Figure: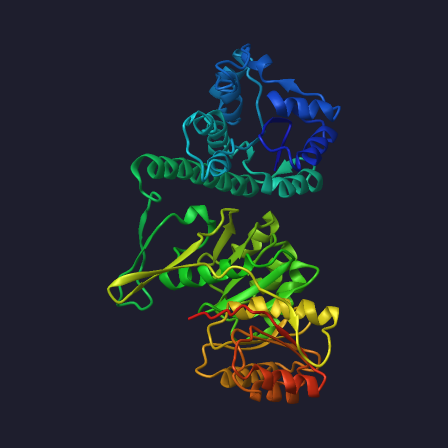
Length: 505
């Protein structure tokens, strides 16, 4: 364990920084800072030494040069175990820096702010190409034997927990994990800059990287990936992603980005085999797994919240290929990295493309992403939906949207308890979903049903009602919609027409 005694903080985004600063101050850590960050820290009534007092230079060239100085980089790069380094640091009065909290100028955000405009002056974008930030981040990451580096505000909660729970002490493994994330941040940043110049000045949509894969869907098929995966996620651990992994990862990420509240899902062959929402990540995981524990074996797991140690421990006994999450607590990583081939991916906040592409025959198909949930909310059954049913119906409709057609999703209390997908008839999909629910002893009384397309007859609602389903959601549009609606009216069942079909082939 190494004790943090000094910290350099220089960030663009101040969100979440206050708790970090106060925790450092409480532990007696000496803080160095620059510009706006220094003002922010001083407003918290926390002592702060300006970097200029180390360099003996003010910020010059319009702020382009502030930290690029041996007094700063010597304090970051100096090896504490090297006698020559420590002697030179003493000679030149260079204080050691044990923690560097540095983020980068918002280059991508600035580029996006000019989208749709005729750009006559590239200056504002060029000025958001950070120089000192990446240099400090890389220096601190390189010297992770002695220095903790935090390069993104998403990691502030993890850092804060370490500062409080470990009294400003860190292990080598924790410092190494922060360093890996820091190098990934720099890689993604440089790629974004490269993409901008390729697109703007060379008319290429993005700087495509070709990545050879071990093989395709089957071992006898050659395969490669063309694109930049680092824009979407950062791989923290595990073997190289395969063709089939990437197909499932794509399905998992598109699914999980539909939800804002804590959600855990399990994907198998691009279909959802388990998904649930609960108050905690652990609760969501347990409910998602319970939906179909057999299919979960060897699947791709995805969560829209950070994975904590308790959830990691619960997951660890299951064989799975990939786990995707918004973040991972260090203690969770320590558990999950126990198996060397297990793939762990941390999502970025980069939006997914607005279009989908598929090779077909001797050409290429493209279409807009299937955005949204419902076009309208038209209650046409024999009674109104209860508030709990409405929440379950909206959840079920989103889940059904990500199942291969023909698709049926059965949901109860924000938990997928049965599904039928990829069937050649809707009634087969329904029968399969009911069978799945019963296989794992779910009580269908009070569950709801979502269908990705309309009911051509009233047979589906009749069968579902007999099984215990009392609320339905479907897009409508059949010439015989009235049959299903009349059955619901006669039996006092709730039915919602959305006006929006969600085929997925």
